[in-house]
Length: 354
Image 1 (cartoon, rainbow, N blue to C red):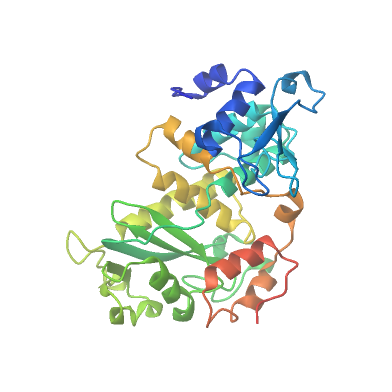
Image 2 (image 1 turned 135 degrees about the horizontal axis):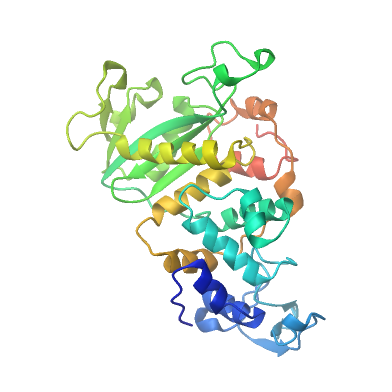
């Protein structure tokens, strides 16, 4: 199925009917649009009549697995972020287009206004779309790789007197959530929300995602010391007023990414909780990684990633507090930290790893 829309108006003109939306989704998540059972992976399925009573969905096909051991009913939305959603796919597609093409994001209030849905619905839409952006198996970074960390949580001087904390500026994580970033020169960026920025936390991340033959560029933060044992490690000493050693070795690219991210937080979202921070960094990372692609390609790629990334509302709103983050901050020293940490954020009822 060919789509050539370049704007939101053209997208809405193309997806006028719900049937067209379902056909497009099927073409993106299934090979040649041929249905595959999301429960057992079988391609031997029967086409059944739609069970929906809505006029807009009467002509949309549904399926049932032909294997007796499975025999489950499903549609193109089963097992995707669209599963069980009462929102029309046409509205979903408009939201995806807006989020993938807005450089600094779009707030739930603004999205709700443009799509004629409530702010709560728009907030849930935004987070489920961010779930689509997650990379389950990112490629190793090669060549020249820049690494840096940032802290999200607001400036102490802007807080009310009874909320100010002493010694909380700079790299202090007492009142902020740290995020580590790796960017391949001319390539992709990877971001990781971490409990702290100790060497025991951030160096294993670099060892897992940076190729051994790459040139790793960082500032002179103590947690980066020792990387020269595994990499060609270049240090840029910012505290001495040096922001590059020559025209090749600098950390300007990752700092530019942080700048765009912070502008989005301050100007669009205003506040981001520690629990959902990794979703926002994923959103900005997705747009950065697809920065050279036209809007239609970004949209196609996002829809193609919709399968196997469900996110329920109850899972989304589970509570994780700053106190919980502090409790686990020392629990990852001998582990690969980022996946356990993100699993904990998404499943707050699970116990703190020992």
